[in-house]
Image (cartoon, rainbow, N blue to C red; front, side, top):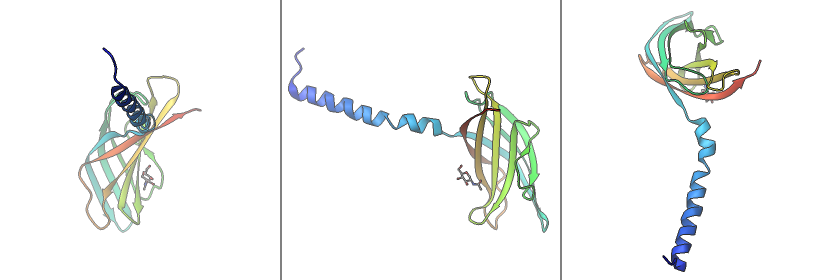
Amino acid sequence: MQLTTPLITTLLSLISTTTAAALPQTTVTPGATTPWDVSNFVLGCSPGGCTYTFDISGPATADVGPTFSTSCSGSDEQQKMVPCSDTNIESNLVPTQDVGLVLQVSRFGDGANGGDNGYMYGNATAAPEGEGAFASFVVPAEFYGDIVY
Ligand SMILES: *[C@@H]1O[C@H](CO)[C@@H](O)[C@H](O)[C@H]1NC(C)=O
């Protein structure tokens, strides 16, 4: 078949449009979030602070390893990440001025590349300011790279 000039022009603009649209994916994909499901979140607050327990599970990710499921507990007074039953998972509950109590969760593990220790992190509001805690919610976690010791 003989390509007419208008068709070639159309094809060229299609190619350049496709190329331009494809470029952002190289930066967007590494930042894609992995959902970690929090359930049975229970908050107990007293004048001394708030303690919490919850269950959490998440899918396998190439960066950090297979599916996981564990239980965590702590308080908003600890001011640091503390290990869950599965010690590769850590949590912390942080009081914030703007959104209330924020649950931070991290996960360490060897990815598909072995060797290095991958690190994922995410946070989510567990209890909006002045309200009770959500019983279940999703923590959007992101991969932040390999920790080299
Ligand atoms: C929650 O995560 C976001 C994105 O990483 C970060 O900017 C924010 O400071 C975190 N908030 C808390 C309370 O950890």
